[in-house]
Length: 360
Ligand code: FES
Ligand SMILES: [Fe+2]
Image (cartoon, rainbow, N blue to C red; front, top):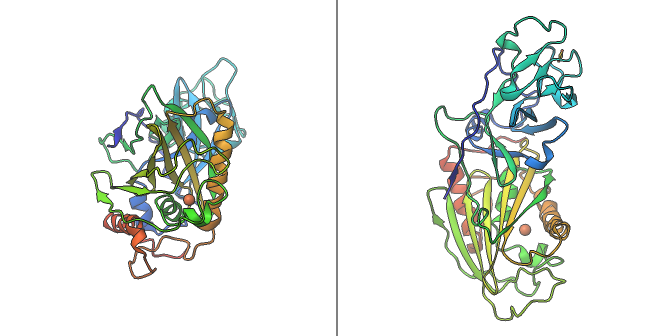
């Protein structure tokens, strides 16, 4: 189910790693989370300026050079100026990002390719940026801060994304002032529709949750949830969906990614990926690629607007939950039978060795 990809090799700077100025994660948790892959940008946003992003408290710069996308430490190896403040080279010289302070230029793989003060001298290796592997999938740039050596990355699979009958849409990323685990758990929660999503798609008189049973898989777990709760926008004609039993097929790849494949009437399929990128323990950037084989004539802007409203409904819950981190102790919160998926999700996170026990 998971999809291997081949990223370009990363360059290692000769300088020691710069630790994040602000560490919001328990160090043991962070070491485990750093081995996984997360999206950090829309591919379409990596264009004519360097992009400053953050992952697990680590500040990174994303840019293009010589046909590849580079993800590297944001700080210039010379005097530590953030390269997100830099510019992209457009003078016909080596491609890459130019530091605003003394003009050092960094190209493919994070290599320092030009030093204006000494243009004719060889450039020592310690001027290279610490670069991380970058993989492009589902319209997103993914990276990993501590990849296992010699192991190809495995990204969460997205059903139907590559099929010709499906349209691919990428919603603008959503910034959430909360923890990625809380956000992801909200995505796999089937008991909240009738309360939070009434203005967008849900029926307030249909709150009961039919039984379902999540199953473990090689990537995490999946759950097939059958119910009569529709998924058409509240404003839309229901297109003969009376009496239809909706299937929501969740596939969860811990730590923070899941897909939801919704079976619509007349063989319609809508797949939405919820890839929660842990900016810090208190901040999440949620990426949401969508694939669907119906309503392809609806303007993409309308799809963005509808999903932005749904995400906003969820955001208001995630940002107020206490404790902010997802409690993994089964006795820390009360659970409903409807919470089978979230209980298994928490169990898998515990099995990964995570604790999320430290307050942030
Ligand atoms: S600090 Fe970047 S070139 Fe000097
Ligand atoms: Fe929701």
